[in-house]
Image (cartoon, rainbow, N blue to C red; front, side):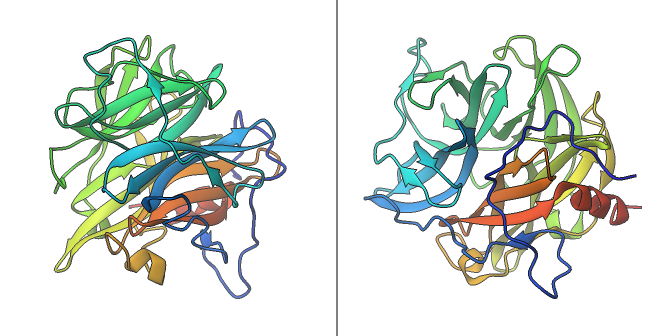
Length: 328
């Protein structure tokens, strides 16, 4: 059965390159990589692990930029084609009515999710340690911060693009206050985007290429075969962490239940810009744009914690790959 996209919008100007001749990869890199260099704006040390979304016939994004002080913060940017970006030089100024959580410590690794009537942003937010920040914007001009979703320590908060059984839903990865040497993916739900509970375990770090930790990546993609979740996984080598990515299919109404999980990785750091940088050997997926008409997917990922890369796939082929390569 060929997987069908559900609730997917048309993106006629989706960035796209055909699979290179002679390649059998289900996910292939853009020939223009890295599409965003580390120093696109003044004082930027690195631009990576960022999220983009269709916006008014073009594209908008929330970008992680570590500046030359090595301060981690979020910036907004715009593009006509999803490849050539104009990023505002000043960080996003969040409006927050709660003075306890309003002070800035750090913000990084955002995701952007169109949900109901606005664009929600989740990120790793500094509040006596890393936790999941939540906010929203209607226009990418004014940004409003809500309550943090969880207690510290937590990372990789990823919202679902619709309510499930009448509740908002989010993935996260409980962690620690450092470079976490462990971590599984969990599912949580909320009636109001503020109070989160009913936590459920989704999957663990138990494959050879990701035996250290795993974390959800882009917003899950709804298909007739289940939620397509692209995630990163980490192994600890003799030379440190290696971040790769893979995919799984989850039950549509109980997304903590894994239907299929591919055994191999989908992409690992192999290109020079993925292997050499501030943090070597990293591919970290944060955004996936899908055209509802063609099933084409453009995947944005951080490379070596330094630059931003772009890769392409067809959703139906990726679903077939997950099923064919599933853990038996």
